[in-house]
Amino acid sequence: MAHDTAGGLTGWDLEGFHSGGDTEAWKRLGSHIVTVDDDERGPITGTRFAVWAPNAKAVQVVADFNWWNGDDLHLIPGSGVWATFIEGVGAGVRYKYRILDQWGTWHEKVDPMARYSEQAPGNASIVWESDYTWEDDDWIDRRTASKAYQEPMSIYEMHLGGWRKGLSYRDLADDLISYLQWQGYTHVEFMPLSEHPFTPSWGYQVTGYYSPTSRYGNPDDLRYLIDQLHQAGIGVIMDWVPGHFPKDDWALGRFDGTALYEHADPRQGEHLDWGTYIFNYGRNEVKSFLISNALYWVSEFHVDGLRVDAVASMLYLDYSRPEGQWVPNKFGGRENLDAIDFLRYVNSHLYRRHPGILMIAEESTSFAGVTKPVNEGGLGFGFKWNMGWMNDSLGYLGLNPFHRQYHHNEMTFAMVYQYSENFILPISHDEVVHGKEAMINKIQGDDWQQFATLRAFYSYMWAFP
Image 1 (cartoon, rainbow, N blue to C red):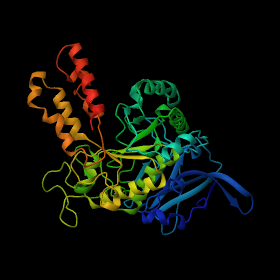
Image 2 (image 1 turned 180 degrees about the vertical axis):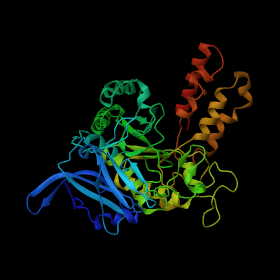
Image 3 (image 1 turned 90 degrees about the vertical axis):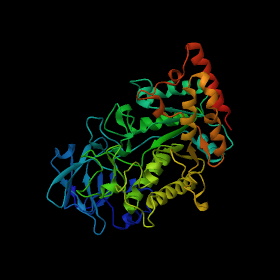
Image 4 (image 1 turned 135 degrees about the horizontal axis):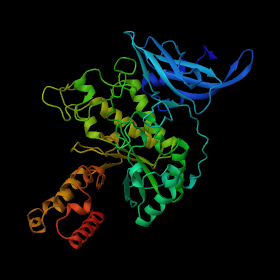
């Protein structure tokens, strides 16, 4: 039986969400198993559903428990958030929202705040509450006291689904830990684990920002994997994609029939290269949604750092756009001032809340001050991927050994600007795919020459200042 109550949620609870200051929005929005007091019957347990859809004319929850027929949500006055409490609904229930737009069309959408989702090709959101008990206190204490710039860091970047196919989060724990220890890595970096629709992809087209992909198990199975890595002394970095999101009609795009999370103007709101939407970083609710998401992975999953994908595409309004196809900022410049403010906000907030974590920018231009503190005018990242070093050195590596003598500058140029930022030297997944070949095959010569050259190259990389 649906109640007219919002499960205890009020307009006051949502003030921070609307001001851009709610950094834990997942605790208020989405689906939550809660207990409410009924005047006649006392405490009643069920699930509260809450979703932000300010321009909708009506919102329903369609789910297993109502045979996908729809129970109405009620607008919390002045908040643009619709909510309802449904008695007796517990964990494991699949649901979606059905949203009536201003023009009278119904749209079926997954929950932007879902913390668990159905496996692709299904996409329903799933009610979930964690009961995981962490055992990594020693690791967290050590991380808090760590000195990132003085300590060795060697990162193994991997796509979890392609590493040893068919393994779950729990299966992976033993195999992965023994491999990383044998190889001497201090950290593992997972390419995005947020829910995404296309299995063969790497996960950079996110449709469930709060939902660890269910391809390898449930959210607590991922917690187990991270916990085991921590107990083995290995840090966990996760790729985070706040730069764009896909246009799947059941996901974030045009959520209530209008451009809610994205810019309405395609010159600001669409990535032509990737066929995706761009977040509206100037909108307070979008800020709350994204900063909460960054904090969510660090606080709820004990992730030790986020490598922020495609930062350059966020920083520049004319990124990969032809003349006349972009909108300058209020000063007439090409910098995206809203995105710059947002990145500073995320970095300073996360470092304050969780000292010892790593915020890493994948930023491919020479934007100044990426790893400078926010109070000194920087973006506030801890580290920046040195893409220039990677491109130069891999170009050098692929040359005929005789011709390398004319290109030594490609191996030394990075030393000229090495101290302008806190750099990480990456060999990115982007460089060993799509016909770009594995590292060993980039090198000319026979097997012996290829292996000897690659050993020398890796030694050079490890010894780089």
